[in-house]
Image (cartoon, rainbow, N blue to C red; front, top):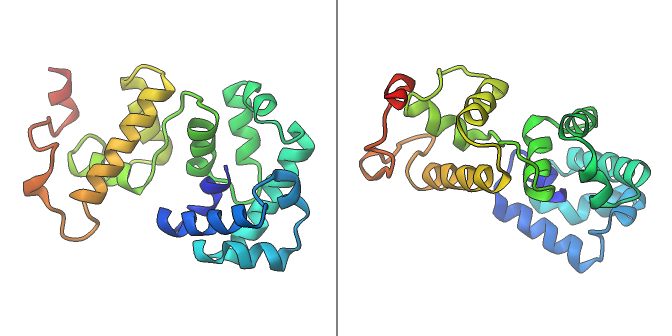
Length: 191
């Protein structure tokens, strides 16, 4: 869940460096994060970028997690998905992508995560309209695939892999795209 917050607007390698620093300090425990001095936490997560904002977000999340669920993932993820997602979205700095990442990856909940790679790949293959919202993209995927967390996890990972390998923001490598033979419009999918 810490990773979901730290990965906002940065790459995973920088998040791993920050998490490693937190781990070495014994600071990956929710109760410890909730009371850690702001300057110390900011120093530890600095590699993840936007460390001042992310410090506030981590502390707000940790305090909520300790107070509301006693720092128990079992208790937290027993909460019905819709209710828990609403709670997460009500926290400082937690948007849909971060909340859904926590729900899917930490909680094994059947919800699809939409990120920049997902949006780019699906838009370029004309599976979603160019200005589709997070909710529209998520609904399209979740209405198309069975509601199974491992499937959503794998599908998201594959879209990220395509995005990293071929579907770059600038200069996409369409010639090597593994999705080349797939339909390029929603109409084609139905047939």
